[in-house]
Length: 199
Image (tube, rainbow, N blue to C red; front, side):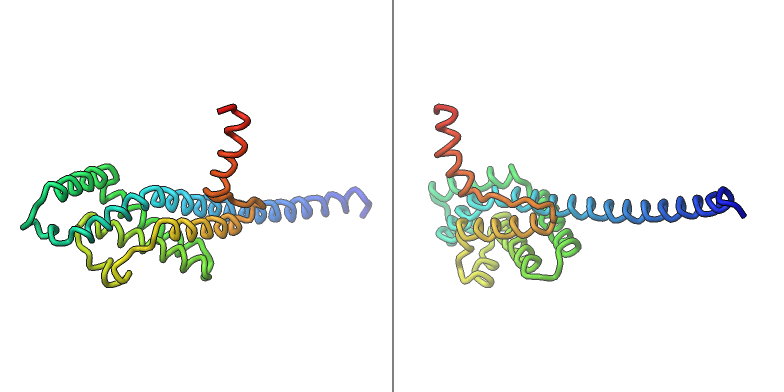
C-alpha cells in the first residue's frame, strides 16, 4: 500500500466524521434558535399584557368601589359611565385574546424555562393577569377577595416584577445582552433624547 491508497481510504472516513459533526452542531443550533424564539414570545406576551394591566387595575378598583351595582339591580349615572368605559376597554382587548395569550404564556413558560424562581414568578404573573381579566370580564370580585385579600397588586410592583422576569429571560437566551427597564428608558428619553433632538 502506498500513500495515495492510504489517503483514499482515510479521506472518506474523515469526510464522514466531519459531516456527522456538522449535522450534530447544526441540530444544536436549531434547538437553541427554537428556544430563543420561544423565550422572545414569552417576553412579547408579557409586554402585551403589561400594557393592559394599569388600566385593568384601575377598573378592578372601580368594580370593588361600586360592588353594590354589580348585580344590576341598582344604577346611578356614575356607575353607568364606569360600566360603559369598562365595556369599551374590554371590547378592545377581547376575552378570547386574553385567554389565548395567557394560555400560551403558561405553556411556553412551563416548556422553555428551567424549574426555578423565574418559572414560578412568570407563572404567578400570568395567573395574576388571568385573575384580573376574569374579574373584569365577569364582573365578579371572588378572585380579588379570595386570592388577593381584596386588592390586586399595584401596577408599579407588578411592573417591577416584570422587569425582573424580562432580565432573567434575556439571560436565559444567553446572547450576552442586558435589558433596560422602562425607568432606564424614561430617564434616557428625558435627559438625552429630548436634549439631542432639541425638543
